[in-house]
Image 1 (tube, rainbow, N blue to C red):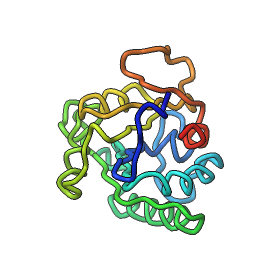
Image 2: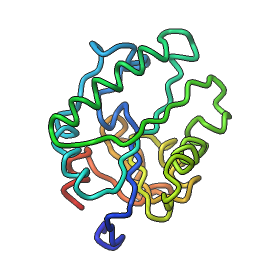
Image 3: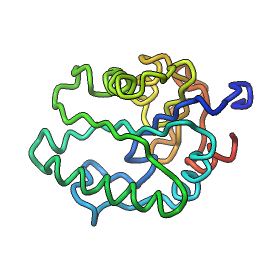
Length: 182
């Protein structure tokens, strides 16, 4: 149970973006704000999570930039609009880290832990043992494990993922269900 974690105000929440906060585009990338669609459950969850966690950090792979299908500026606009809407509803995102590398073995590309270490460089008080990674793919769970975090799998896009699984500490249907469990 999540209650066993004894989550206090010094914990950090790491979130994947696509498939956690917003709907994924099947076999494609969210390339601009008009293609970005929040999960309603996430909009309800983020204000609750903002009351619980000291930091909320998004870590997202964005190969579409590396492929030239979108620009860093396109992504910045998506993230600015996303963050503004979350703030309007009483939530917050403290930082967003992304990796546009095409090489799947890049240290900064999930499942490697590079973005977690980027976050720790910006926020030195992050303790990965007091951090939770929430994602919708096993690569998110591997990312969390590779950085020493607890992991939460959301079955939003891949409900067929086996559970229990050694990579997954907790499993919920969506972000709001996770927030309610806290």
